[in-house]
Each structure stands twice: as C-alpha cells, then as structure tokens.
Image 1 (tube, rainbow, N blue to C red):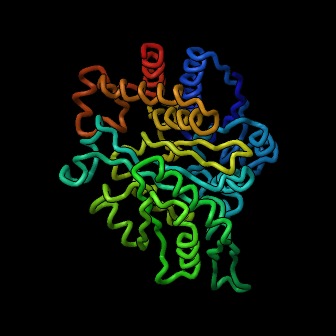
Image 2: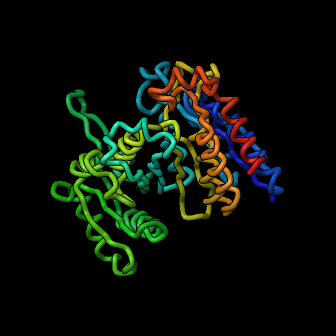
Length: 365
C-alpha cells in the first residue's frame, strides 16, 4: 500500500525528530511492503519568517490532501513578542480547525523502564500508570469570541459549545473506554460554568447507549489534585479544550517522561488525522542531536493504527521502542538520576542513534 504523509517539521527540534521518525516509518514500510511518500510544509515560526503567516494556505491545502499529517513542534522565544494572531501557535489552531480534527487523544503512559523518573511515590504508582485523555480540540474558549474594549482596560474570551460538538467528543470518550477498562470520567466545572452543565446534560442523554461503561463526573480542580494523589483511579478522561490542555500536560509530567508521550488528533474519519509529540520545540538543543525522538516515533505508531488501520505495524513500533528501553538505551531527558552511570556505560545516545536503535529493533522483531 502507498500512503501520502504531510510533514510539518516546524521549529526548534521539530526537524530533528520528524526526520528521525520518518526513517523508522520507512523501515516498517520496507518490512511490510508499504511505501510512504512525504510532502513537507511550513508552519509555525519558520513559516512566519518565510511568509509572514504562521499557517500559509499552501500548508493547509497540502495537509488536507494527505492521508495523514505528522507535526514536530512549533514556537520559540524568537516569536514571543508577536501579536496573538501572528504567533506560531496560531498554526496549531488553524490546522486543527481547518482539518476538522475535533478530538485529541493523549495517552499518559508510564513506561516501566522509566518508572524511577516518576515524581510520585512508588506506593502511588507502583502498579504503573496508563490514562487516556480525550480532549475536545476545536471548540471552547480557544475558539470562542474574544476581544478588548475601546480603551484597552478590559479583555474577554468566551467558552462556547454546541450540543453536537459535545456529543461527538463524549461518544469518542465512551468508545475509547469500551476498548480499555470501561471507565469514563467527565471532567468539567459544572458547579460554576453553564457550558459544563450542558456537557453533563449531553452525557446523561447518551450514557444508556454505553451500558458497559461506568460514567463518573469530577470538577476540574479536584481532577488536577487527584491526578497527583491517586492517578490510577482514572482510565479515560473526557473534557473540554482548555481543561484538556492543562490536565494532559499535568498527566504527562507525572509519568516522568514528557519526551515519551505521543498524541493523535482525529476527526470524523473523512479527512486526515494529525499526529504529534506533546513536548515543545526546545530551541536550546535544536540541531544538536540531543532531542528524544521516541514521542514522535510513537506518534507514528498512532498514525499507523488510527489513520491507516495498520495494527501489526503500529504494534511493532511500540514493541521496538520497549526493546530499546529494555536494553538500557537512553537520551539525556529520560536518563534521570542514572545519567552519569548510563553515560559511563556508553548507552547515552542522541536523536540519530536512538532512532537507528528503534530501526534495528524493528528489523529484528
């Protein structure tokens, strides 16, 4: 099979990790008889520098014609002083809206090989950590009406959701829970926000269609606390755009390995999915062969699974990453307190070597 992948390397370490990940995809393709064709597009700060626009029309048009899109990272201090609509992050908003990818799936998985890096006590996470956060991606306060008054003394951002927007993300949450441990927690602020009360109304209206799933509710402030206090109580969390943005970053930190966590942004299946690591652009190490490519490689596994229905191929990538970790190989960000020991053993590696190790594992398994 032939697949066309739109590549948006972006800024900072984005080009490093995207290049490395494509080599892994090519190794998988060679093993299973698939061909991946890559088309590269500008977005983020590099697009601003080249065109003055964080998301040129050519980029969105090209992405929409692709079978899937792989994104590295966007942004950096260089563009921090630009006005809001001209910042690199607007490329993300434009891509999500333009591609109609309304759901962001963020697995917060603590790899057993990296458990020592988890900041929580062993008695809290001793049995591991595996949470899926399903975040609404194209509505809410990030896309609502915003502005300032005439004399610039007040500003506002509006949280706005429609019932159809809420229902489609809730259904995806229920369906995701059905494939896991059948527990879904709706996180909101229904004691304060009218929009959150609508989320609960829609959940009540459709929950009987998913009788095998246990549905619970939690206010977002309590959820933030419970993620640290007792994260294993969660299976699937479904929530709004802003709450999901915050909680998924918190969840990634309690795994101790933000450089390991992938994400998939999906729509109704009629267009391409958008895949990216959840970490930032880390411009301080860009081009230095220091970035951890594993989150992007694991995002490629999600791409194979969700966009191309290539389950065996996705499983192979995930097993290859686990083998590399089992063998003791680490990039600097996941070496933790054993950094000096790992370095002395010659198992501290950079972007290029880590991706090659995954390729070697793909070929061996």
